[in-house]
Image (cartoon, rainbow, N blue to C red):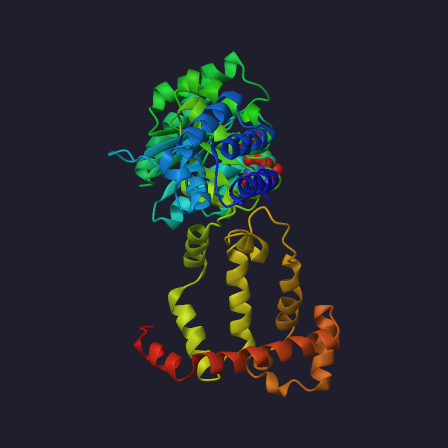
Length: 438
Ligand code: GDP
């Protein structure tokens, strides 16, 4: 879980400070010292942490907070607001050009996740109704072009490449090609290096000045903490980027980069990469991120993900089938797929209030067994589990690499779910369902 340490320490410090009933100026100052330590340990930029503490302390020792009947809620609200502000207040959206195509130039150091992000962004924009195209302008790293082609294909987006010819020329030709084929967004993958060097910057400048991008997005690796912030500063000074994409916000990222980049560079984080899969991209919402860090959950992102993963009509069909006792194991399988699309149980639970930063004892593999069992059934068995006699159950267990007991458990759970659904819906549910349009 990203930000685990920071989340835990901040929540601990705030609990200690606010858990004594009356809040004193002294308690605020002591508490803020701990908050500052937590920020520095999470690799937040020193000046940024200092400024943050000053602002929060000033507001917390204000008369209206200290004399308030609910000082603890006030303090948490202030920390939440200031943290949101620190990360840019609101979600910074992409800019679009008035002429086609809008050009997004992605740059960053090698290994930051730039090429992967090109495809993630293309896939994300396709879902938003855009028609993106990718251009391969990293001609130095062996296999970079091939890599872009592979990920481009996975998200079903065309990739323009001209081998190792001058990347400035390739970028220019890509624009013509995109125009001709009416692709409205061109995403340019540029070269990366292990370290910032003049040659790289010169090439990026030449591409920038030739194609006049609508967006210059810098991809940085959140795992590198302060290094990511320094890289962002250096790139921005040369290229004047329009925004930052923070990758690898999954895993054990400490939080320093997310909390410092906007304050240090003045440039907003527009997206985050949250895993290796091409669907692991999220628009960056400072308010939601602050809530997550403070253990207040991120129910809004959870709702977004649910809306993306669940088809409303499908959900309606599921409910209607449950009610009329026609729910099949096939439907069960569909629901499992939707959960998977939402990032699995563990990631869903971590977004609930009070759960972020906690060691969640949920096994994402737990869904694998039922899935394998259902997949080993014939369509007829999935539709009507009542035909599952002993020999069929034995065959399914062997086919799915499980035991007959596992098969029995799943079927029992399925029957229980069917009964529960019927009970839950009852007369009230029937009425509500009648009013729903499917
Ligand atoms: P590039 O050199 O900047 O183009 O980087 P790549 O796109 O080749 O990515 C480098 C490595 O980071 C690959 O192994 C990716 O799978 C991995 N990666 C990229 N984005 C993420 C992310 O958001 N989370 C995780 N965990 N890994 C990522």
